Image (cartoon, rainbow, N blue to C red):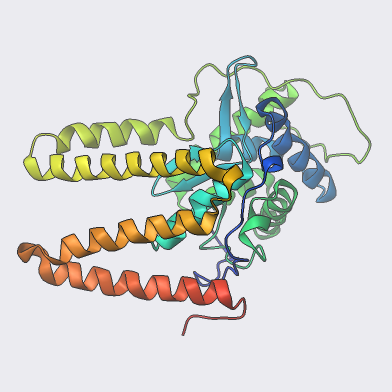
Length: 322
C-alpha cells in the first residue's frame, strides 16, 4: 500500500506502545507462518462482504513471498517496506524491530504486514506498533480501506487499483496484477463477481505464477540495479553505494545480534539505542565535512526534531505535532 486516496491523516500520529521485548514464543515455525495471512485476510474479506478472493489477491500483490514448494507468492505477515525496498522477517518481533529502527532514523513512510498498511498515511489505523503487525487487525484495516475505495468508485476493480495508487499509470499496472491473481484464485478467465459467503467452502489453490520473482517488486529491483551500475561510473556514486552497503551490513549484524541474545534479555530498546548511536556518529561525520557543512547541519536539525517527536509519541500516546 503506497500512495492513498481519501483516508490520509497527518504523518506521525501513530501512538507507539514503546519497545517490545522479544520472548521465545514470538518466533513461529515457518511452515505455519505461510498460513497466517491467508486465514486473516479470508476472515476479513468475509466480514466486510468483499468479493471472494479479491482481498486475498491484493495481499499477494502487496506482501507476496515466493513459496518454493507451492511455486506461488503467498502473503507474508512479517513484511516491512521502506525506501522502496521490502524485507521479509522470520518473526513478528523482528519485523517490529525493523520498524522501530526505521522510526529512530526518522523514516515515516513505512508499509507493514499482510496488507502493507502505510504508517504515514494511515497513522490512526492502529493504536500500537504491535497491533499494526497483528495479522487480523492488519487485514481488517485493509478490508476497511478497500471498502472505502469501493464506496468512492462503485467498482471493485477500480477500488483494487486505488488501494495502491490513484496515479493512472501506477493504478493500471497494479490493477492488472491484482486481477490476474484474482482470476488465478478462482480459475476464471474474467474477474468473479460473487460476494464471499460466511459458510466455509473448499477453494482451489492459487495457480503457480512462474513470472513473478521472490521479491516484493521485481521491476523496482531491476531499476535499482540499473541505477547502481550507473552510479559506479563516478567516484561520488561509488562512495554513496559503499556507505549504503555498509549501513545495510551493520543492520543485518544488529538483527543477528538481537536474535542471538534475545533469550539473554537484549531488548528492542537496546537495539534502537544502537541505531541512534550509529545515526549520531554518521551525523557527526557529515557535519565535519567542510564541503557540505550547511547541508549536514540542516539535516541534523531535522533529524533531531524527528527523534524528539518520536520519543514524545512513545511516552505520551496523546502527543501531537504542532
